[in-house]
Length: 157
Image (tube, rainbow, N blue to C red):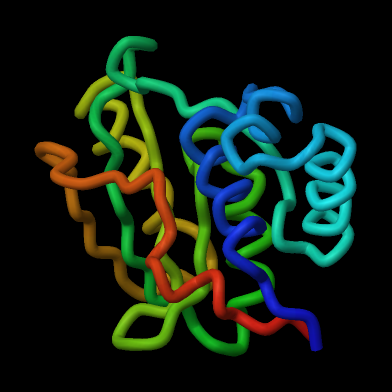
């Protein structure tokens, strides 16, 4: 098993803060060569630690309401079909299978609350959906760009 060391953790942290950071900028910060950083980055990708570098969008600026989390309870026998249908819907940014009273949670963004109402009604008509509960975000209190400090001790298979 391979362990993430403090340098790996620092590389990950710097990329979380700025996904466009160059290998040479990261190298200066961690006092290694840019070639060493590139090798570590590629190793982290191969191991599945880093899966993508992406943009963090301000959805309000783009004309969307704050996100809405939709808890969905589906018939277990139809869950695969429900998931397949939900994955195709445009307003759904994220879809998670969860444990608890509801077995799915979707994060949606819509241009306005009227659209949210229509979309949620549409979700309720999907074959296999038993119940829906919505949680409208009124403000984002915390959005971390860092990992817990213990994460660099994680062992990889």
